[in-house]
Image: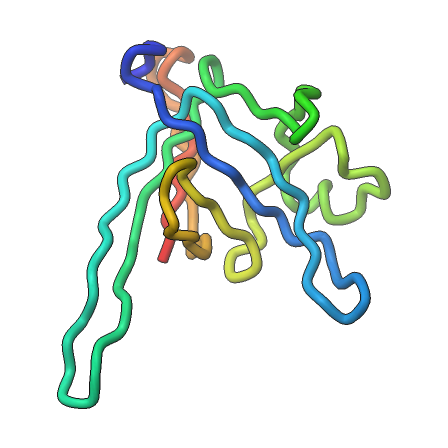
Length: 134
């Protein structure tokens, strides 16, 4: 799972940074060498249908590269520290569930982050985040 051959997906992470001109503003972070599984579908009902897209994103400590749109490296910062940082441009975070999103490059599906788990047991090469999206 941890080789570049297996981690071939690129995902855009949207961290909510507040409002600009009464509109939600997001900082985009490009996550290269990640693994993202999407389940695209719809729920049919008597009145119509609604989308039921879900997904799971795996971000590995040692293999996944986090970059800004101009290619500068970004470092993970826990959400409690990130939200009080004035200059967020060098960092990315997880933790603002409900306001943050991710989108696999090449897909039209943009998923709201509903939760995440930190997996930091076993060999360090396998440490990663598992991010749930709905």
